[in-house]
Image (cartoon, rainbow, N blue to C red; front, side, top):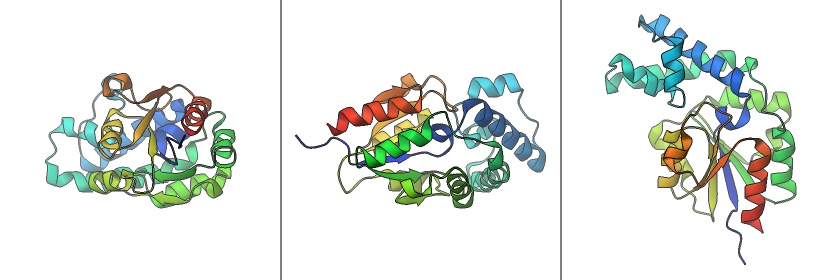
Length: 210
C-alpha cells in the first residue's frame, strides 16, 4: 500500500509556537501597525473575537482599501520579525520534528507569510534548521497558494487559521489544523484533522505513512 503522505508543510507561527506568546505577539504587532498608520485600534476583547484571522484580515475592519494591504502586510512582517525573539517552541515540537524526519522519512517544508530572516533565526535558535528541506517565506496570498501545490506526491499542511485551511485544501493538501495556535473555530473550515498538540501531528502522519 502506497503512502498517503510524502511531504508535510508547516505554517510558521501557529504550529511552531506557544499559544500565549503568539497571541501576545500578534496583539503587539497589530498595535504597532495602528500606531504607525494612525488607526484607532479595536479593543483587546474584539481582537480576541477575531483571533484566527490574519493581522491583515483584522485590519480590513478599518476599511483599508485593497491596494493598501501590501504596505500593511510588509509592516506586519517587519514588526513580527522585530519581536520573534519573544517566541518559544510549542511543547514537544522538537521531538516531533525529529520523529517525522527520521522515523517516517517525511520531507518537511515551511510555507509562511513571515519573513525568511525571522523564520531562519527561530530555527537556528532552537536547533530545527536541519529538519526542513525548503523554506518558502515572505509569501503573499497568491505565492503562498502556489507553494502549497504539490507536484511530487501526496502532501499535507499544518496550519492554524481557517484562511490557511481553505488555501491548502484548494491546493490539494490534506490539512492538520492546530488548536494551540492563533485560530479559533477551526472545525468550521473542515480540516482533515484537528490537532491539539504537536504529538498528534506525528500520530496522524504515522497513520498516513503506514
